[in-house]
Length: 204
View (cartoon, rainbow, N blue to C red):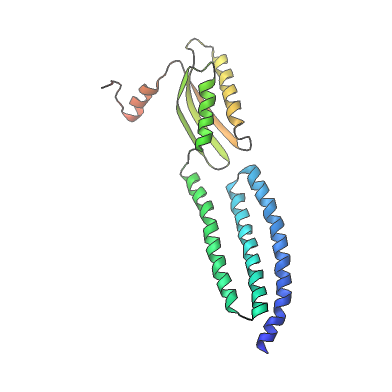
């Protein structure tokens, strides 16, 4: 009689879970679209939260169906264990990305290579050095020293900097950029290395 009562309750439970899956699926699609547009880690984490809910609800629905068909209550416990493993696995990527942001991770290699190409191919930039990049998830930070003609007017130097900044920002228009260019009349990379890192200016 007890098993019959449990089985009777399973039918409405399945319908409730099915409705929950549909609502969660629509919410996940919306959050993933916003996360893609903004590349915001908080929204990504929220999307992951509801995505795990979606798969968890689907797994519970399957387990309820199997329990309903077979009468084996142990199936529910095994599915619950599987859901726990899935949640831990899914959270790993978000945790890793969060740690990288806290540690001031540099921009992706492809993005750095694209910035290098912009600086190297500008006809009025003699050379550049000390390119530094980092990201906090939603904002990209770029700093570099560019060597310009020593007799160039400051107005012209700013025009070149604006051109470079505009090109860099187009690499990821969905991100906020903080770009700090420095103007050098000559390549002072070795002098700076000697000042800040104690490197010798005399070649052995």
